[in-house]
Image (cartoon, rainbow, N blue to C red):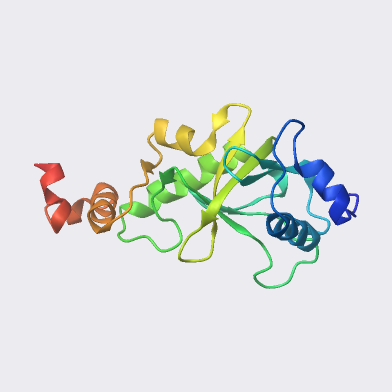
Length: 192
């Protein structure tokens, strides 16, 4: 594993694809600081700024990722210490919980989703396209493998539901995985 040693000017040269408009200095500094913190993380190719979205894209070896549950994984740390890993929350799906399931019926679905996410990522190059942070300070991102968008694959295989914001959507997802909650709360009309 080679160390990544980049100066800010070298990073700018790698980060802006040919023909793309230049981005502001603050954005370049944030990108530089992220790469500096990443240290020896196993990047399969340089990070690039997607000029259409302003999102940072990078590719990791899927074998270096830590699967947390069916819609969350962590990137590798150079020098492991508590909470050093960047947690990636896939933006497209909401998988059943495997860490703190809301009911007994949800746990087997959550474990299956976690196992399938691991199968989709292991042994492949995984492209990460960041899009922000959630309220738990996890990075929101899409993960792309040769087969396609990992979140969309999880949804297509019925291992996860499409993520929607709001309390009614949350109640619907809870009732989907935990039948005892069907007919309870604002989402009950979806099951009639």
